[in-house]
Amino acid sequence: MTVVVFVFVAAIPVIYWFSGGRGITNRGRSSGVATPTAVPDAVLGEQAASPAPADAANSPSPALTPAPARAVYWGLWTEGFWDDSAKTLHPERLRDMESQIGKKAAIAHYYRGWHELDDSGFLAELNTIAANGWRPMVSANPYFFDGCGSGGKPLYRTIADGNCDGFLKAVGRNFKVFGKPVFFRFAWEMNIPSMEWNIPGTGDAPQDFREAWNRFRQITLEEGATNMIWVFSPHIITSESSSIAALYPGDTAVDWVALDGYNWGTTQSWSSWQSFSEIFTQSYTELTRIAPTKPVMIAEVNTSDRGGDKVAWYTEMLSKSIQDRFSRVVAVVFYDEDRTAGEKVNWRINISQMSIEAFRKAIADPLYRSAF
Image (cartoon, rainbow, N blue to C red; front, side, top):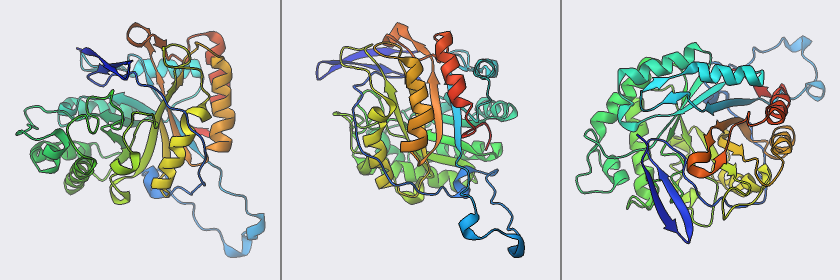
């Protein structure tokens, strides 16, 4: 069951959505870009093999050798893909969206209960996703439960101090059994107050979060889950967000970095129409400064149709901004759900025929890959 709690922060209504839901926050504006950096093959997973060396005598001169083609792997969370109340995965929902878009997705994203990451049902879901040709991306936020009790300490301090080790070991074993690469977004958007697990909302300091992250990751590695791709995924910078730099767990504990951000248009009292670049540039610049060698993902993104042109927004994002201004981005995952009832905004790509046609045309570019 989804529980909704309304809180007022700085006169802005904030909604807490439990069980992996979206929360409303004031989306910040930004500016600036970062220098592009090559993406190591190792972080892309088992299928990102380096090309075999060519015979030296037949190789073109360096001046004539074309630069390697850039790849951006695209994916979706789509409405109904995961039914949390029935604990049922519906791959047909994602296949239907692929059919409408006319292109297969590389990444299938869904939100999963933290306390169930160690059970057999979760493992079956990962296998179903892989069997459909997608790489899973799992977003899980921590909370107290029987396998991870507080003992009177804040959430991340509890994890960092080892109170949840038995559960974390079981999670690691489950991921190891799956065996294939899987993106794992632990405590996504931990930097904004609308998320229940935010820092300092839990009573933790940034150091507690970093230590909890590192302990969790180290335990899963010790259990053999080397297939987990750890994605540090804050929300874009806002006037109320915590420092991304202070929360970053460190290069040795992070495989990818990511950002979540949305164009709310005029759906909220505090929002206005923003381009993709206006939404992401400031945060992208900061994130790539903090983690200059890590591949970058846009892990959640979409646009409203209120207050501007949704068709033009998709075209500008996919055919211009990602290609020309965000050269470090190697994956982009769309959030495709109608949230009109709770948030007064519809994020569906197929909200209109013109919208999906524009998306289909832009995503058809060979830059956007359907498999790793």
